[in-house]
Amino acid sequence: MTAQLSSNSAASVNTENFNDMEKKDYQPGEGFDRRLMTFSLSENSSTHMSIVSTTGSNVEGKALALRNGTLQIKFQEPRLSFGFWFTNAPAGFKVRVFDVDNTVIAEVTEPNHGGGEKEFKYQTTQKIKKIQITNTADSVLIDSIQLPPVKQHH
Image (tube, rainbow, N blue to C red; front, top):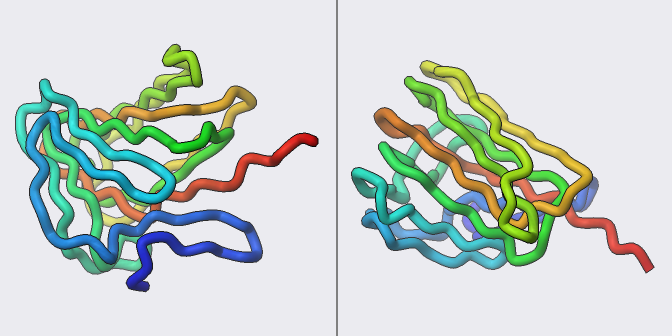
């Protein structure tokens, strides 16, 4: 796929796959905007994050390589769930979930994971405004970020 965002009509899930982005490094304090979310690398991260080329089943084409640091993903609209695919993660990583008031509503530790791809999913009844992914070792590759639509109540 070459589109920045794909839509699975059966499930109405929007997926960010980075495939239309150029390979690039982002230094601590830098980031980029996408249609449904903003990505930024914490200023106190010890090294850069990158858009890289990769091959795989779900982590394929282009992916985001998070090295020793914290990635913040801020959703344009609050969500009740999200997911993403990853590979590597030799030291595991931590995902902090924030509500619309910037309060931490969950902290999930993903254990170390060698080769192969794995899916991370989170769902709640509280609206999620942003997440932070902290990696303390060599790069974890993140791809196919899934944002199911928020049901509108009329």
